[in-house]
Amino acid sequence: MSVNSLHPTRYWHPLENGKIQCDVCPHHCQLSEGKRGLCYVRGRENDQIVLHSYGRSSGFCIDPIEKKPLNHFLPGTPILSFGTAGCNLTCKFCQNWDMSKSRQMDTLASQASPDMLARACAETGCRSIAYTYNDPVIFMEYAIDVAEACHEMDVASVAVSAGFIDPAPRAEFFSHMDAANIDLKGFSESFYRKLCGGSLQPVLDTLQYLVHETDVWVEITNLIIPDANDNPAELQAMSEWIFNHLGADIPLHFTAFHPDFKMLDTPRTSLGTLQQARDIAMEAGLRYVYTGNVGDMKSGSTYCHQCGQLLIERCQYELGVWSLDDKGCCRNCGVKLPGRFEPLPGTWGRRRQPIRFA
Figure 1 (cartoon, rainbow, N blue to C red):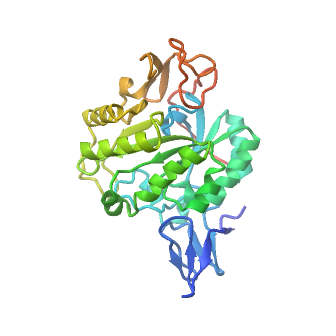
Figure 2: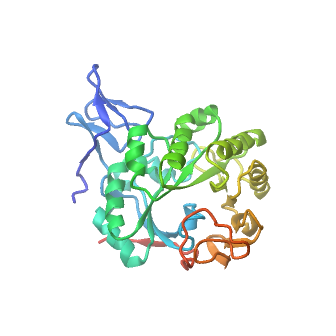
Figure 3: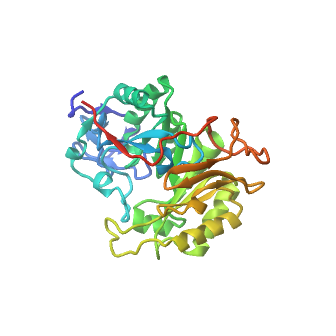
């Protein structure tokens, strides 16, 4: 596959003003010939919208699946992670900005076809593959082809996404996914507009679609940023919305911000702030609420909502106590833990293993 190859796409339509509108996400970029959309990897060439990053990645790495983060999907197993360049949001706090904000195709240093990725998963024992680092909705054609190849190898597909996508491509993209972690960045339109360059409602629509209209296993991440989206009232409103619209069983991860990209003067999130957010969410009725990026075993572990038994102990992606039976039920009281579990947990641990393709 040539690194200069362009891949055709189909979510676009011509406009009367001579431009072509991309219909993948709510930005609806209107493009003249030779121009790229806000995401940078979708652009107009020869009177059609093409994908510039098909088969090209910013790197490949085997991670613990808990790092995505997914706590209720194949715990302890390794997952092959990769992404491309570009993004359809402009978050000032982006923690993968070197890839997602890249405007250099040189960032895409690695090449891999869908079949190569599927074989790599099988050969390394990865139970799943993650489309991550930047948002996979912008390279959906590549991700879908990879997912199809992986499914033939009995390898699951995981989307790590902000959920900022239009309904038609959303239905096609997620029909190929087995699990998703959706990054709910805040709970106000002003936050999305000022700090993310997007809007909240399409993300809420994606969450409701996934939970109520698909079989995709869904978990949610909220990166808490001091003095930006950490207001207790906003956290309460978000938690109540999740409970009322998605249900009590959706795992919610509150993760710690560290200064990065255009918010270098903003302090790190304290463990106390994360624990307060967790308390608010659990008081709102959510059963499985976690903290991340802080290494706190208690708030990073899973407990039975019925009897309080420690079901899955975690410390920085390392699993300890495992109190689930071979059907994914609490060994103490028998209640089933929501999620996708195998009879025994994986043993990958906290390792991070970069891989290269010849």
